[in-house]
Image 1 (cartoon, rainbow, N blue to C red):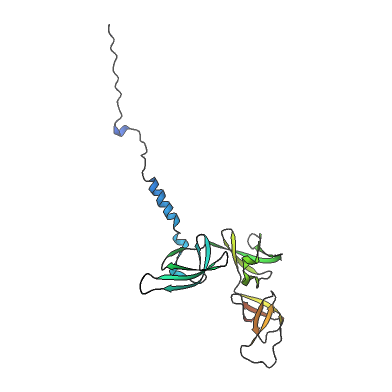
Image 2: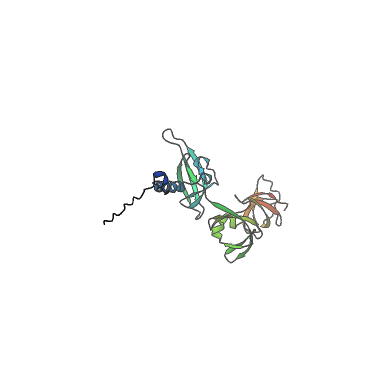
Length: 234
């Protein structure tokens, strides 16, 4: 007697019954390239147009912070307009000349201002206390700059400028009262309008003051140009 092996047919699931599998995407690489291209451009909130340059504006070039010292908008008879600038490297103090296209977007310098107070001098360093955390920080005369050092005194509140973790400068009040510690008496009978004489203030800096100013008086000094402003009541 012969046995016949039954044939078994396996039914394939229809299209609507097949298990779902995620399809591969062919757009991953283009998306990554696009994202990288966007990251190289500074965010609009962190960029400034060269048309908006003004003295004191801080920008960043190749990771280095610069301050705009001078600028000039130039519109030639032929060709595109441009902006000619003099920039101060806020790390080294050196100046450079650089030209930008009119309307060119430039990255702003990511600056942080920290409120501090000068407490004392430790050797060659000026010690400042963070008014929020009370941490101390020692800064060299180079970090302060000559124009700040000559007006620095204990108890003065300042703004320490930081670019990342690096201190690149210190801002002091525009007008500060100082005591005159040494000056010659005014020449009696000298009534020349606007006549001045040298006077030494408590920090050791020399200021030109009117002839009527005497030793022991307190005067206001403009720390930006080092000029006498007037008598102080403080």
